[in-house]
Image (tube, rainbow, N blue to C red; front, side):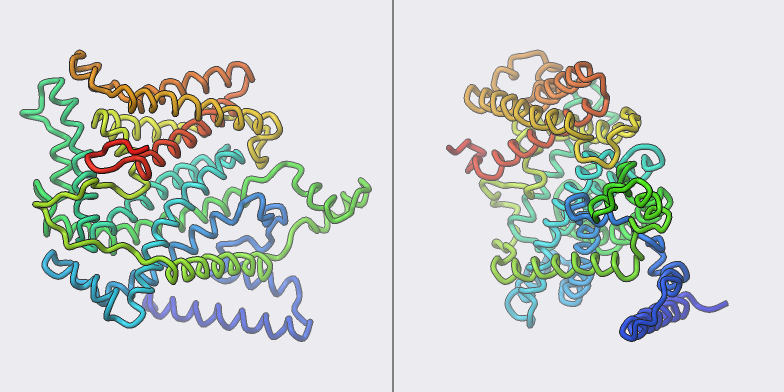
Length: 485
């Protein structure tokens, strides 16, 4: 039985040989449709695609290239991460010095680190918007429900992937960001304190100790985060990406409108019904995946790489003073994708840091099981009605969020100190906004007689509210978490 390494090398040689042969044939105009189809169907690396790709799914305005862009950023992060591992030392005595050497001594080290840093932040944003693109084009129905759940898992892993790497520089920014996150995790103790069971059952404290390897951020924490970042999460992500692509292939490609073939053919100038039928039979609404689709994906990869290279030249990744447990940063802020949570935590830790994110995750998971409507699949916002619903929902959420956060910030949130413990636990601007968003979603679903419109309304509200609260945390919070205007 051949060794796995030998099999991979042989497959790579066959792949390169097939591609070179096709390119040579293309130059002499002797390549056939059958040859290119076989090159896709008979090769493992190309077989992630079907032999033919629908032209509608190649429209930039439909997918925005977000799925391929997510994969491109992941591959760039893998490559730059391996290069950084050559010089990085996962020790609290040497981690900061090794990162500083990478940025100042190692040839091109600063450039590689910058690419890795901004690629990580970019990947979080791109994966989030990719999930939203799938949601607003109803790409989660039918056999695609499983892939929707895989996509949510990949988003959570991407955030964890980025956050686990946040600690590795071992500077003040990294140390106190992880300290804040660990305190948020431990905030479930508020619930167990209310129930009077913390003495013998403290899930928050257990999870915090499991995450940190102790009661404080130290060497055990750095070791665990390093292991997560360079071994466990990359392996799990690669497996899930493979499952994700396999489920897309198994579902017949991307979710596109039922009349996508007619739309493509009509755009090419074919209007006669008989000619349309003949063109559909000849599959003129599709193209061979090799080379058209693969060239398009290669172009997206090169654009992502070029953007990161430009960002790396213009903006350096931050590196503050070495981590000092005795001197907290003021203000100590989490990464931007956690700042919305940190803003809500400043009012009540459990509700803002645990309950609201869990409710959001449950709502996202339930989407394909709540919305079983078949109409509007493949159309942005499900059509004209959905565009109106999303536009109005954004405005409503903007007013709700600014009003609630304005009251919370302007009048203070001290009244909860004298309220009953249960009220003080759940009374949070986040929980109030979640309730208001849910009521608005229910009203939209009832008035339109469409669960899909209710889903779109809720998603629009959550997205708008999350952006507003994150902006507050980024630009309007200063020392001692005081509001700056």
